Length: 336
Picture 1: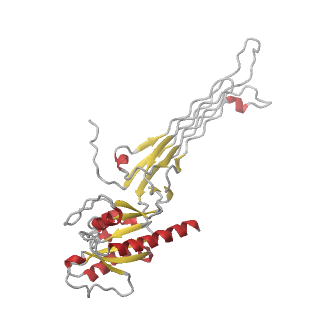
Picture 2: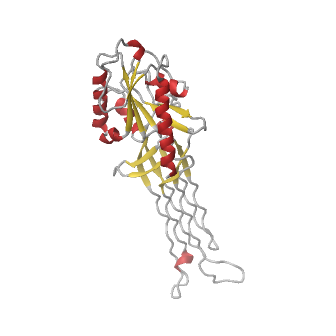
Picture 3: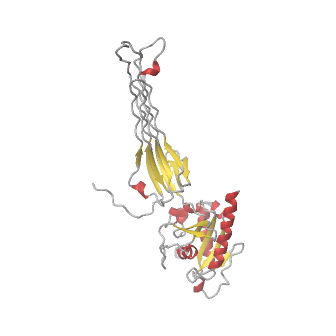
């Protein structure tokens, strides 16, 4: 069988198994030296098994590599030696993951931990303890013990990894609402866009920087459709990526049949998936305003509404002002 051909698919959920190394065995040994004919026990302890760790890598954007290798085991500890020498510890295994990766125990469903920073390290499976050699069992009444311990097995865990992007602002909307074009207009990010649904098949990240080079990260999510919260279309696959965002931008196609109705449907999908998403600070952007004759019906009570054209640049400066305010607010929150 040849090696699997790699693809460029975006992968944000994978199942893997991790196992710590087994501890080395203790040994039975007695001193045998020329002038010590009846030497005591000197069997050493076995070394501990290696651990399995995850470490954050800011350059990774997907869990794709874990679809090719799903089992990770650390090295076993070495057995003890004579003269009470302890066996060497098994080598650790370190797997690199994107920032925003959450680790779940597949059997209990419990969260083991998450990686949020570059270089952050998380213990996934601990290696087994090395066994004791016979030198450990010597007593005044038993000077020549012929017993030792075997090394303990390392922890073995079945894990589920879920990637949730670490973005500050989430752009959400139905397919073909112009989110990718808006992201490009705001950040200059080169993203694929065209006038047909589901052009965006993976989350796209863009960075807005102010004059102080302070940055805020935006995430353009693949278009949500009605029923996304129940698993239809692409939406459910990517909705998890807005759970960590601070702010939301609802992007609505102003040239659609019922733009205001589209906003209400979109809001219901987010509510069905996770009601707390609607507690985030948000604005509503009616995009493609250059394609409509009147804006009188593009009003939503109690919502901050903006009329723009990401394609022509009309009123993009107003959205930029909002993002600058959010950036300042983010900086204040991080300082306190």
